[in-house]
Image (cartoon, rainbow, N blue to C red):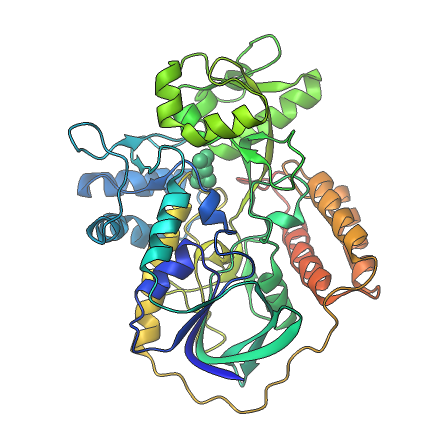
Length: 479
Ligand code: SIN
């Protein structure tokens, strides 16, 4: 058994930024399920939002609340926006380099539903990768990679650590503060943009332990994804492309999005995703993202990774258009926390980043608010950790002894991904949701391994929340 002061589960932007705010006088361990770069932060392309200045704060707040369809937690949005300039300044002061123009001024781009150019980026279209690399370089604490958290140690409503499977061996890692920063649920869906390791395991443990998840029906789909590649993770085509002039068109070059919303390509993400889905179903047409407005040289400099990745898949950008489909992108719902990342029912337990539900995104997340959320709430949680002394945990804590993987799990896992895509994605029906729940329930009573069970518990929670919300709002659309 290993004893730490703080255990952080997950090494994306939230986990690493929290770690950066914990001094080395504290014994901190970061636990990471796969290789350090396999997190959603690494794959984030477009950028990170910030209020441009104090005058922009109310505008950023209003854009966030409007995108969130009135379901945001106003206090959380206010915290997010008011602290945005501060966390960005902190990154810059520590040496992070955002993209700048030749005169050295920060470059701000635009994404859908922002009324201002307020998105900072790095490496052109590799913002997440650059921030992740930077934070990894600054991280002062040890990291245990390729360790899967298979249980939370909780006794008498106090967090006591985690149980991990490390290369086939189970270990208890004890700590009085446990910060969960493990990301969303991408692998529950057949088509998604997430790192392969993101599969909602900890949300499943929370279901088992009666730790409250909220807004789980709010699953966000990115409108412009190339899904023709063979890997599980699909190729994101950043919203910044549309922000800078890429257009969505049908096979004949018709810009049908304006039939759905006057803002066309720059309408909120849920509207664009649904319009693409609806149009391609009704008209049996392939939908494309076209870059004809871009100059060749500018495109390669501004979007170097999209250029290279799509080139490797056989597309000559910006001359050639790319067939697109919406795909699962971001879990808005998650572990309910307060404004300091605390899970109020368990002392010493925190959730930050995509795994958390702070309420900032409401029913539809405003583009590029998620990296910002990761920074702002990670720092607040780290401050809380430092302000409180954890209580002693008992020596013996009940943990799972379930087998992790059983024969037949892989086929059931694939079936789950299909059910979620067919019945719990962009357009839902009550019948479809009920069928999804029945199938998930049936799989849960079979002899299955723990890892599949945790996925199923999380998926069931998404379906149950979707069934409980009878009317359409934001990303939750019931036909
Ligand atoms: C993108 O680059 O389109 C992703 C931005 C986001 O998900 O916020």
